[in-house]
Length: 214
Figure 1 (cartoon, rainbow, N blue to C red):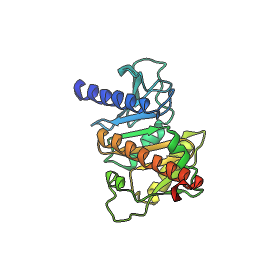
Figure 2 (figure 1 turned 180 degrees about the horizontal axis):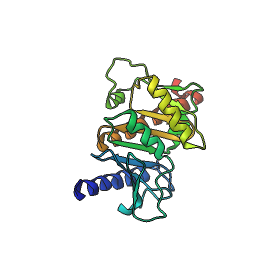
Figure 3 (figure 1 turned 90 degrees about the vertical axis):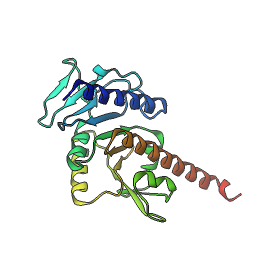
Figure 4 (figure 1 turned 60 degrees about the horizontal axis):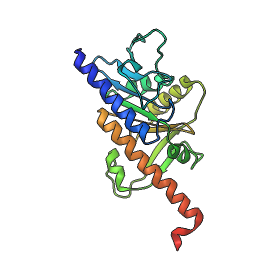
């Protein structure tokens, strides 16, 4: 694999992380991003790094056999690497997987006690590959666990038994994860989902105050 491919992948991750950070979706050191490489290894953000100030040395390369490639011995991959590994295993077409911690994604995860969140039938759903008229589109919600391996196991179990409508999921009170066949598409998916979440939060606020009927 050429150095150019590796460098380009890191540049894309750094640019995306900075954009998400600036929008308040990856504050502090929250969130994690990964890009899959042609040999099925993937770059993922290292744990404890500010997503607005990432350097090429702030990533860990994870190989299918579990071997890690990193710039320094004390560098550790994101605590949620297991979720990225499961996504890449379940969805071979996935080339990027992004996870952010936004206020809106956490709020909407509380809008239902069920394991799926009904999304409003907005035109923006087309950007997620949903082209039906008045679609009934659900986003799966998973319980948050301190042990990330439990979250990954839940994702594997449910997605093995059931197909997904859109390439994304919510972890309750934790954040949203999206994956796609290219880094650009994954970034678009996150932005579209955040638009939909903002719409849902705003709609609920308007309904609760009654201003929508005036």
